[in-house]
Image 1 (cartoon, rainbow, N blue to C red):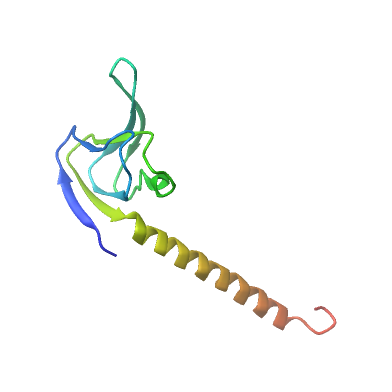
Image 2: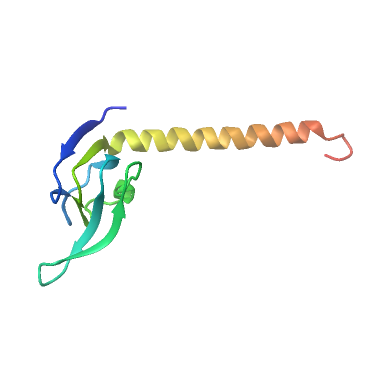
Length: 116
């Protein structure tokens, strides 16, 4: 899966509120936060994120974000294109369906004829 890894200094914006969205971020190291800008220009912190988090996964279904994201500490972030995440989601869903059908067939085959 292609991705771009960047290290971003503390207190820097990563993605902007109302900005275009064509990738998701995976936090590899450091802390980040999601925020919304208030009418007076201040930021309302919505959430904090640590390594392993995908704070903007919902951007897969949005044309623009309704929040911004910034670093709290120096952070390493992997940017994964939406196109690749959508393919992964489709493959995972297909594997889930196959797994469920296989399990159901095995359970059905294990029953006696009268129990089926």
